Length: 489
Image 1: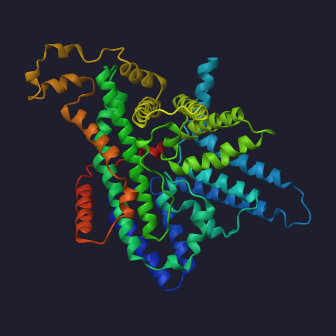
Image 2: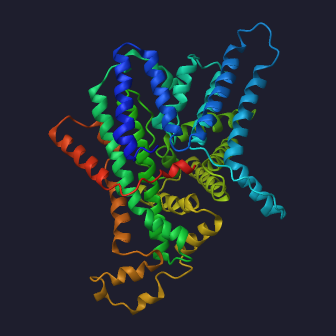
């Protein structure tokens, strides 16, 4: 089920909210949590009921491993070491993820490298598998280190499946979430949280439906349909995708935060105006912040601790390896491998600059960072290296700056729109194809983000009118329900 579907907006969300708080009003707190778990499982399996068994097996497996780890020290006899139990849990999760997400990539790579003809398995990727798998790996790590206190199956299952974050994050930590499901103060309707949650949800819906989805046509034409792109076309396509991804993913995160807040559950903020970053370190402190936190805690730190003596060189190697793994986590393809390596290398260079106390002016630093992101996000979107090279080749001007047919146009054609159609003929564009991403970029760079606006929200008539207008406009413009981009990762 999608946040931007009428089933969710008009049926699932209101029914789930009403029943949840009704059960809490009757002091049936365990039943209310069980209801929320049931609703989350319905939400997850709506797209394909077969996914339900997959996530349930994952939850039961990880809960069992976590329980064995947590109880290990209290046992007098230890037939199996604690480390062996943990490694078994880690291997199980990685095997689970590799089978569903990377098996065809592995087989295809073997065929390409060695000339074999191994048949692909065409395994269907379960929605949200990357998110709920690494969430549970983090839980097992903390169980191994003795940091988990709440061991109730209901609380754990709800922590993993809570529907606002389930399909595309933010990535949650058990210490932040499980106590919230048990807190008494969260069982009562909070009208402030409802209004602020509704604000975030509608702003996120607007981002997705009105902004992100309006850029789909240009992006698809450039990456999937066109055989070649001129420099202008390629940069318009890459900028359009960069903004589509931002508004799509940040829109989902806003809606997740908003829905969580309606249930009095505070989810971690995932975005803080990342395109305003003046260097790549700053970018990763602003973009997909819950993933950055996970990478730092569960990838970078363990890699660094494995060294007997920590040096700057080893910390840079750990930085590169962690980002390289993060790239692979995003998707099964060489484009993601290269994307992760590029960001790992950029972070190393950025740290070297800081170590040498080399600081660029903010405007110049922002420009270089933005251009780097624009180029590397091409890899993020392209279905294969050929499509990525097509767009990058165009961005470098290797197909010319503008279409050859444009030389026959004069400036008088500008008003009639023929000039713009000729300029962007490779993507079937017009003047709106160019000015829309530029307008959205100004919005991203010049406006306060949704979380800042939510914190400043006051219960006034103006705020109510704004909410009503945004929500109504988004609802009436839902020509078709489209998936969120991060579902495929």
